[in-house]
Every structure is written in C-alpha cells, then in structure tokens.
Image (cartoon, rainbow, N blue to C red; front, side, top):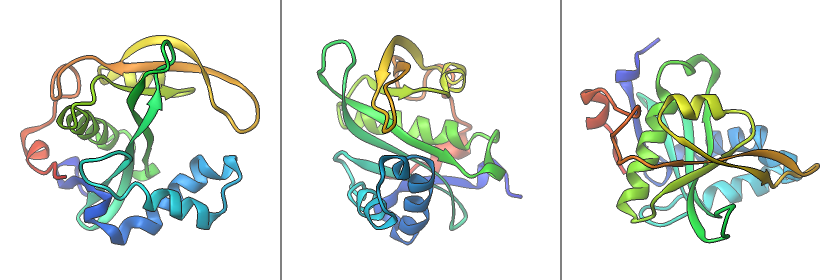
Length: 180
C-alpha cells in the first residue's frame, strides 16, 4: 500500500469520476439515516461539486483512487445561530485510516475556509472529538445535534489556529499536492 506521500487532495469538482464513490460513502455513513435514497444522496453530493463556494466537497486520492472525502458546508453556530463554514462528512476508507488521510483532508478544508474568508471553520461531532482534539481543533461547547432518529448530544468544535499551524502541520511533499 502506498504511503500518505502518495495522497493528494482535490476538489470533487476536479475529479468528477469519483462522484459515485463519494456519494456512496456519504449515503452509507450518514445520508441514508435521513431516509435519503441513493439517488438523492448522489444529488446531494453533486451539489457539493463546487470550487470557491459552499457547499464544497474534497476527495483524497491515492493515485487516481478515491480514499477519503470531506466537505465544507454552511451551518449555524450553536451559540448565536450565525452562519458558519462547517467541516462535514469526513470519511476515510478503512484500509487508509490512521495514516494521515483524515488529517490531510481537515488541513485542506481549513485552508479553503481561510481562502473563502469563512473563519473560524467549525464542526459538529458525536463520536470523533478525540481525533479532532489530537489534530488541533478546540472544543467550544456541547451542542444538540440534528439527528434523524432522536435529539442527540454532541460537541461543537472550531479550528482557531491559522491554516498549517498547530497540529495540522503537513509534510512538505504532502502540502505541495494540495490542489483546489
């Protein structure tokens, strides 16, 4: 298996051939719980095929093979309902986990949030707080999460550093391959 140095992150809009794969991941992990059909999940993912405007999906590629995804979407801040740029749908295929792909996707998302002048970048999580804390995110507040079954308590977090700072430091060769 290739190393993280072989992984690049691009806008899904620039690698449209990955659309069905990414839509499948999002459907399986989150969207079907909202009773979206596979066709509706494909349409939702297609709506993220943008550059320079939200919603925007990223895809991590090992060569030409998709190995992960993350999106930036508009959401509401839990304390004041202001519009925020939110990291969402971070997914890495199991055989590529714990190798830096999630960190790489998060770093690129933070950079794009800054480029779009949408800071801070926030996120909501119910079960990945430890991962985000390890890579430099800050816990802001417990928050009620939208959940298709029942209200669920989770955590709202923000990236408060500058892109490329803190724990989301990238190996130079990986940084050179971040494209969007």
